[in-house]
Length: 121
Image 1 (cartoon, one colour):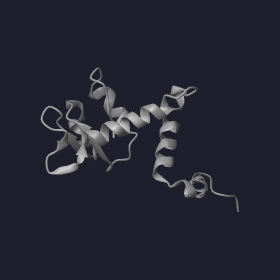
Image 2 (cartoon, rainbow, N blue to C red):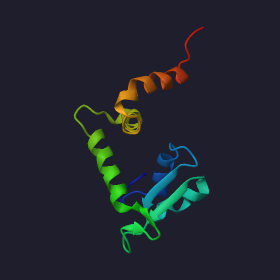
Image 3 (tube, rainbow, N blue to C red):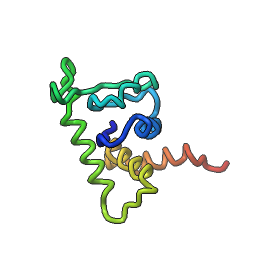
């Protein structure tokens, strides 16, 4: 999920999106800069806000989900003490804590950390 203001362009947007794993599905509005996402190996679902608040035939692709997630991420990242140079780490943490139920977070954290830093034998 990526949202952007209208001051940018595809040359700015695409390098940022390429941090996302290819074959991921990206939900967006119909801004022209998003048109090449399919060519780059991403699934892409767009909502044309001038015509609808959801993608016809796909009610789960709607502006409310997109805007809600973007609002939550901005709110979470713009807390006091947040530094822009750590944005990628903050977003990774946000995705982790929202995807993994709290009772499993510590266990899953150590599993993922052991993949990055295998224990010495």
